[in-house]
Image 1 (cartoon, rainbow, N blue to C red):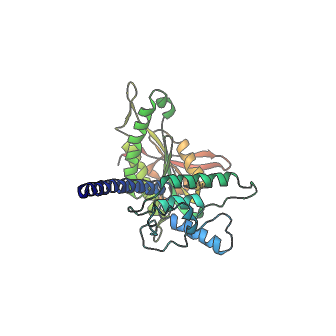
Image 2 (cartoon, rainbow, N blue to C red):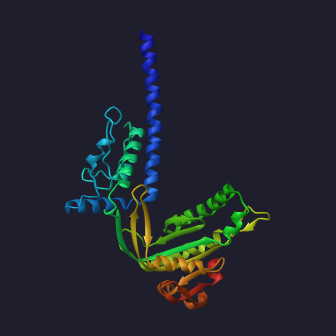
Image 3 (tube, rainbow, N blue to C red):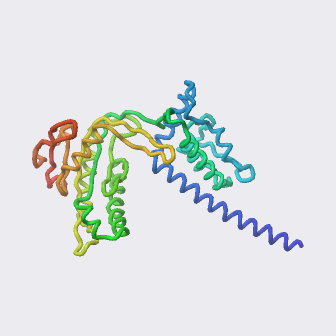
Length: 337
């Protein structure tokens, strides 16, 4: 009987060890998912924004951490880690975020020895969504976070002839091709201190001067974007689409600097996004650029002030609802440096 008890205890120990390892991997995935959708520096701002709303008496679209008790199962959760997302030991009892982002955020911060019931979490999320759908249409949801950012330099790129190339490839080949391209761009972002915003199809969007800590230097940010854009064009020189015969990948690049609105939208899957005329102009610079060229707005051209001898030409580009604006195309020799 003693041997049997020891064997059972040993088996339970191994089972619990495997369970903790699986939970650690699950929690790490949750944290990565959350921070991939919303920059870490934004999360404290969201929390403070909703805390301020509650203090002002507007609680119709907010909840506090105590409302997470419905997710907890006393037999399955031993402890909730109240650390902030940036791993500081700040108390989170007053954390106030709309329900679904709050549940995701809290669930991603359960300590590795906690035993979270995925079934209960899924049930809570489903119930929250149903309640949201059944809401009176007269009620308006509140934005999770929004603020204006001044002097942000933005880069838009896309692949030349992507639709035509994609038609000749399998879906897996298309994804492998984009992965090879975007992986290079991701590494360049780290190298030049530029922030990746998102990818949409074959388009890659990044910026400098957004959510910076410390004193801001708009010209320095703009020059970082210029160096990033030059490196992006060069990074495609030895990349080929897996067509028959192989076709060299080329990109178009557009850059603009201006004021934008940044915010986190959505409750089921909250996402950090940027908006404003500056975003539209940067996109238009890319759309009207030529293959392997860097197309700059006048505002960006004036800010970096590198001398007009470094440009191929000056032209007028039509922007929807804005008319014609002055634009510049960087010389190829500048890209090859």
